[in-house]
Image 1: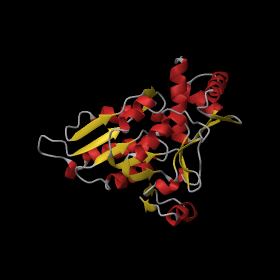
Image 2: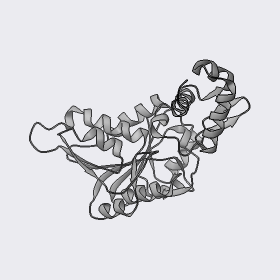
Image 3: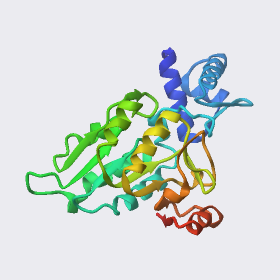
Length: 262
């Protein structure tokens, strides 16, 4: 029989794949009893990683601490298109800020693969400043990228460094652009995050940037989360997917945000 941690990981993989699971089907797939699956789902719900439903479980907005590796499968095609479009806004020699998240991770990958940003000389062709350990891990071997990582305390769920050690470094630098992944965004409350520490470092990134670009798929528009990153008036560009309804994007255009559909 698989360990408890292995079962939990398998259940979360199933949830990100299907959006919801039923106890009977999960028990069959994992070759364990339905009683075991119920206990597992109850514990995952207690940890706010899933929402229990009648006969199973689902992932929704309540799952605020779902680890990044499981969030990556959600709306993956839309996030990929958003990332490619956002990466296209960067020019050679730019100093770019990236916070943590699935979409910003894709932006980092897209930037590192852009041939026009690859320098043949000894100097890096652009700079990335990030508080995300997973982004730093991928970019550190890219010789054409000058990588700057903030200090701070690591959050296991998002791989982000947060706290005063992170914000102190940002007070000493400037950015041409910052790309912010958010948990929610609307015109009234602006860009928001579920964790106050992440919101604080993201706000510091935005304050140091000449251009603030929020990247968010349509499921995050017209919603709000616990802690504010920045008001809508401080956002220059919103890159979202083509599935975003006009009633969700037009309020941003009305307050001067340049909305780009990818």
